[in-house]
Amino acid sequence: MKEKRQTIQKGLIWEAVSEADNHPNAEQIYDMIVSKHPSISRATVYRNLNMLVDEGQVKRVRVLGGPDHFDRTLGKHYHIQCTHCKQVSDIELLEDVILSSDNIATHGYKVESYELVFNGICPDCQKKYAANTQ
Amino acid sequence: MKEKRQTIQKGLIWEAVSEADNHPNAEQIYDMIVSKHPSISRATVYRNLNMLVDEGQVKRVRVLGGPDHFDRTLGKHYHIQCTHCKQVSDIELLEDVILSSDNIATHGYKVESYELVFNGICPDCQKKYAANTQ
DNA sequence: CTCTCATATGAGAAACGATACCAATTAGGG
DNA sequence: CCCTAATTGGTATCGTTTCTCATATGAGAG
Image 1 (cartoon, rainbow over the protein chains, first blue to last red):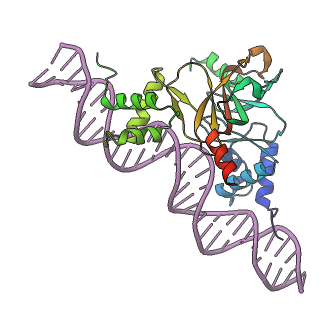
Image 2 (tube, helix red, strand yellow):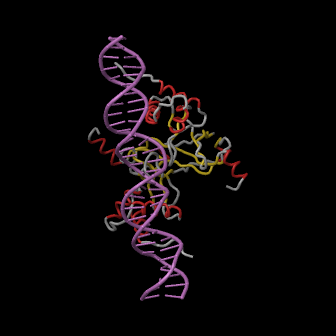
Image 3 (cartoon, helix red, strand yellow):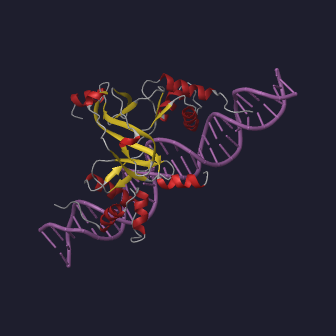
C-alpha cells in the first residue's frame, strides 16, 4: 500500500512555515523556497500546505478578504491582522472567550465552531503614521 | 453640485437586499434582479452594494473563504454560516462577548475591531443528513 | 540494485469573487 | 429642454486558489 510520500518539496514547505515567525501566506512561502529550489511550482506549495493542514502539522489562519496565512504554532490562540501592511500576528486573550452553547440563540443551527479575527495597526505601521502623515 | 444620483438599478438592489430574508450574496442579488431588469450588469450590483454599505444602508457580512453576503438588519449581531449549503443566518449572543482592551495581549498592536463568525449546520441540512447518510 | 507504478510535481489553464476600465447612457440641476 | 458629471453595461483584469495532465519520482517488491 503506497501512500503519502515524503518529497523534498513538502519538506521545504514545512521548513519554511516552521522557520517563519510572521505567519506567511502561500505566496510568501513560495518566495522563501524558490531561491533554494527554483523549479518549485505554486501549485505544489498550495497542495502541500493543504496536506500539512489536514495532517495537523500547520495551522491555517483565515483572514477576511485576503489570502490564507499559515502558522507553525498549533495551540489555540487568536490572530490580529494589520489593516495597513496585512501582516498577521498572534494575539492572546488573557481571559478566554467562552461561547457556551447556552449563550447562543442558534435558531436551530448546530454550532460547530467559530472564528475570531482581530484587526488593528501593527507597531511598525503606527510608527510610520506618526512620522509622516501617510 | 451634482452627486449621488438615485438610479433605478440602485433602487432595485436596495429592494432586493431588503426583501431577502436569507442574507444573499452579490450573485444571488444579481439573480433576483435580472428577471425584472435583464440588462443589469454584475459590475453595477457590486458597485451599488459597496455604495449602500458605505452609506450605512446595508451591512456587509464577511465570511471566511467565500463571497460577501449582505444584510438588511443594521443593528449589532453576529452570523453563522452553514458549512454545507453556505447559507448565512443571524445568531444572537444572549450575553454579549466583551473584549475589553485590557483582556488582550496585543503585542504592541492598536486593536481596531474584531469579527466573530460562527460555523455550523442549518436546520435544513441537519434534516437532509438525518434522512440519507450524505 | 533495479523495476514498477501509484503518488507527487511543474506548468499552465481555469474557477471564482471582485475591481478597473471605458465608451455610452442618464439623472437631475440650471 | 440642455448640459454634464455621475452611473451604467460590457469586458478585461486582478488576486487567490484549484484543476488538469503529461512527466518525474519515492519507496516497496523482487
